[in-house]
Image (cartoon, rainbow, N blue to C red):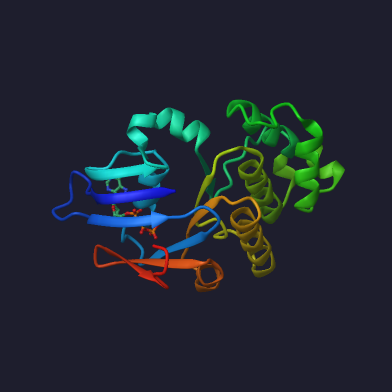
Amino acid sequence: MLEVSNLGYWYDHQDNSLFNNVNLTFEAGQSYAVIGQSGSGKTTFLSLIAGLDVPREGTISLDGQDIQQIGLTNYRKHDVSIVFQAYNLLTYMSPLNNVLTAMSITNSSHQGDQQFAKDLLGKLGLTDVQMTQMVTHLSGGQQQRVAIARAMAVDAKLVVADEPTGNLDEANTKEVVNLFQKLAHEQQKCVIIITHEPDVAAACDRQIKLSNHEFVVKDATTV
Ligand SMILES: Nc1ncnc2c1ncn2[C@@H]1O[C@H](COP(=O)(O)OP(=O)(O)OP(=O)(O)O)[C@@H](O)[C@H]1O
């Protein structure tokens, strides 16, 4: 589904590439953990596959089409959903309106369907009262569930997450990881998670380690 070919990237001030000649394939219905030391380039890699930055070398293709040809704005709007460590919810809105807004902005096939959004948030453990309060009244774990609900409510087939459990305790981490697994296995999305946490990485279907400027795939059956 997502094909990374001969990818290379460096920042202007850097003498060496963060990585180059990277070739990876990511499939729908699978979850991937990207691990590696701090500063190795994980977030940079995520920003490239999320269409937030452009490669110095190589291409990133979705279903055979270069994402630059799709247009990065289009790609970000329709094809990729991003979950951040800091949730990045619209804090002046309720969880329900966060989900409805995401559906509206992306022209989701469920656009305007309040009941669909409510059912989704309910399934993720939010009560009717919590759904309509300001998101800032929720705990970190609950806010991250709202961020995941947004990813579930839109049609984007690719979900990328940067340290999504970084602010969560053990119980919420487990719950959130389960939700990402459901996104991959039940909704057939391609889920790519950057994480420092070994338990989170181990729970994903595949692990990809960025080390010494190279991506090494564990269990390399499909990537
Ligand atoms: N916008 C930027 N401009 C210049 N250099 C950057 C920028 N963003 C990151 N870097 C540098 O690129 C390298 C890789 O950073 P990146 O954030 O991708 O690593 P990371 O593996 O995600 O790190 P961490 O695990 O600590 O979040 C680091 O040396 C960092 O200082």
